[in-house]
Image 1 (cartoon, rainbow, N blue to C red):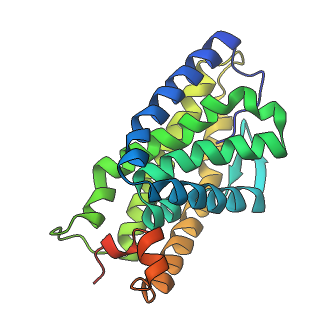
Image 2 (image 1 turned 120 degrees about the vertical axis):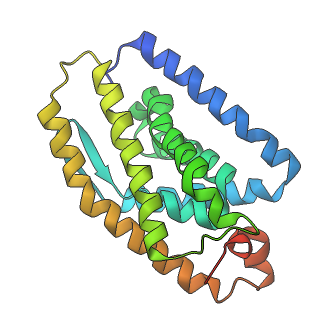
Amino acid sequence: MHIEPGIIDPLRVTAANAVALAVVATQLPALVRAPLNIVKTGLAAIVFSVLMQSWHLAVGPSELHLIGATTVYLLFGFAPAMLGFALGLFLQGFFFEPQDLIHLGVNSLSLMLPMVAVHETFGKRLFAANAADRFSFARVLRIDAVYYAGVAAMVAFWLLISNDSFALVDWGRWALAYMPVFGLEALITFTTVTIMKTWRDKAALARLTELGRLNFA
């Protein structure tokens, strides 16, 4: 999902940064309404950053990463996940790859917009009090499929508007290579949430995660 600096011209990068800031702004009221979301955002950024830094591989026009999107979403909620992506990318760029800060808005949108799609389609059903959907591996896999389809679409979009000619074969090779990664991430999410749900009534987990809102079978 990582787009290297220089591929997109400065005008489009500026526009992407403006859109990313607007998306971030839509989530800030959630921090005002529930200040604990600030802590959850920090935790989401940490989990996301650890997974991102733990493994990455250049393939075709982009890179493969462990993102942990559904993990942070199901553990910490929608707004902390969205803000955690942006914060995590900023911290990673600031401390490890300063040149990546140029594309902070581009790479943030690649993660945030697919999360909007996840939340509005299948995600929020798992948090709804009277919903029929229950937490299961099949539903986690479905959410991850929606998310990574969105990430693949975002990478295709950036390549289409880039300075380089769009190579469909290279993008397809990258998207195909991501398939086992999204399956692995679904397994990581399901295992993590399943283990942690046994302690969801503990005071700290009840306050700092959304496990108490998930519908378990």
